[in-house]
Image (cartoon, helix red, strand yellow):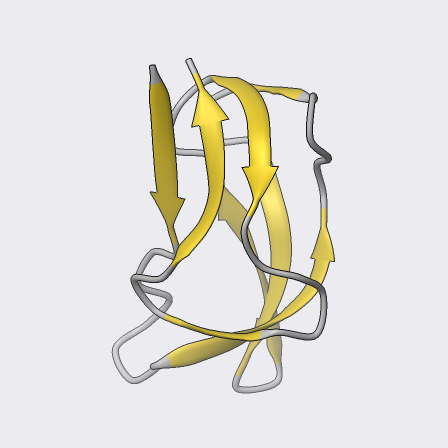
Length: 78
């Protein structure tokens, strides 16, 4: 089953984040809680953790993209 991962809430006032770097690539196995990407919110760097375990099937955003909270960022096949 494929799970589309959405950008989680990153604080009370953050509406979008800047993608700094992907920590995974398509085909990588991930565990729950493992960082998927590094993002910047209000000049603070945060990790976006994997909500499910599986294999990364697709990356839906690119480095330097500004992504709104709740937007799909990747797909993981469980």
